[in-house]
Length: 263
Figure (cartoon, rainbow, N blue to C red):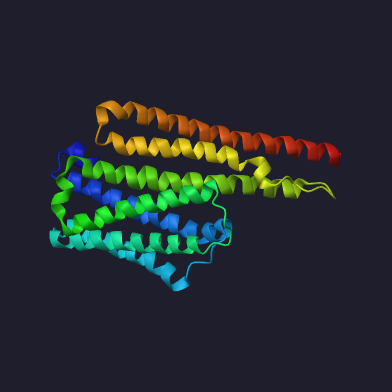
C-alpha cells in the first residue's frame, strides 16, 4: 500500500505471488496438515500419521518459502524454481501419505466426509504436480489457463472440499457432545447421524462436485459455463448452510426436551 501510494518502484506482482505462496503454503497448507493429523485418524478411522514424517512436511514448506522469499529479496531468480519444486514435493508427500492411510481405514463404507477429503486430496495432488512441472518447465506458466486451473484445483477442489468435509464431522460431533453433557440420567443423546443424516450430506456433496466440474470447465469455455458454474457453487453453498442449520435446529429441539424432562 505504501509503495502504491508513494510511487515506489516495487515488484508488486512478485510480492503478490510471494504473499500467495506464504498464504496457501505456510498458512493454509500447514494448518490443514495440523488438523488432518488429528481428524483423519479420529473420524476416518485410519492409522495415525508417522510422527517423524509428520514433522517433515511443515519443515519442507518453511524451507521452500524461505528460499522463495530469498529469491525475491536478493534478486537471485535461480532459487525460485528449486523453491517451487520443494514446495510442491512437500505437499505431494503429505497428500500421498494421507491417501495411503485412507486405504488402511477400518471403516469399509465411504461416507460424505471421506469423499470430500478424497476430492480435496486428488485435486490438490494435480495442482501440486502442476507446481512442480512449472518449476522444471517455467514456460508452461505462460498459458492463459494455467494459473486459473491451478487456482480452481487448489482453492475450490482442494481447500473448500477439505473444509466442508471437516464441517460435516466436527459440527455434528460438537452438537452431540453438548447434548451428552445435557442429557438427564438414564437418557442418551441422539446419534450424530440423527442430527445430520448421511443422505443429506451426500445430496449436497454431489451438488458441490457438479460446481467443481463446471468451474474447471469454465476456465476453457468461460462465456458459456461461467454463469452456470457460479450458480452451481451458490446452490451448493446454500445447501451446505441449510444442512448445518438443520443440525442446529435438531440439537435445539433435543436440548429443549432434555431440559423439560430434567425439570
